[in-house]
Image (tube, rainbow, N blue to C red):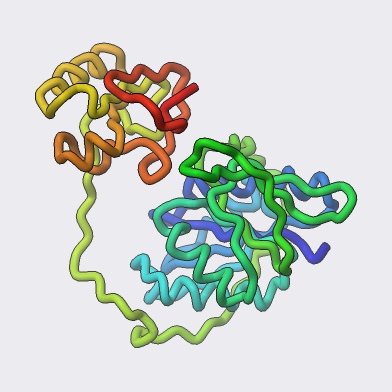
Length: 281
């Protein structure tokens, strides 16, 4: 195997939690295949992130540092990561299915001339063929299927929170390799006018050990105030089904499920939600 390349994300100069999870998945696959794990990091300030990624499980870090990469411009990100893939020549490319990953993964797979294993819940190496086998939801998440990629490199987007990150090991050694990429602002097809951050009050939904969620069965927006009060008493995150969000009863950043946020609480309390497998144990 030529190796495993994790497409990482950097925020405020540090690798993100989903990147750590993807590195852990890559490390698990490497143990089964004997391959090395590399990470691709792009941004405007990467002084610490390369060594940080090595401590989190990478054997090598490829970095593309450019002021144009300070903002999340998918066209520029795509060009940078395509250049890293050409440099690293991996057999497997892993991304986290974050907001950026959802846009980047299919574009990168297309540029590499291969199909994409999307929204993977688990990845394993087939003992006979050495190929990547992905477990992913189908039919709206009501069924899980095992699928295999036939192209090379094999590109897979992992759902966040399905893999625990490795404990950082500052003693791990690895090489940080800068990659020169000629980027131009004209490559970006979208202009970012402004950025707004919207967060619900209280515990961050993705990190909550307890989540309280409501759905269409509540009948309107008013009962959600009582759910918020309950969440506050329990120290819980507050969420909702897609139906409640589509009805305009609660903000979009409350949405949990296939098209919303991924949660992994120890306790999940739902009121007025039925049907969707994402809300079932």
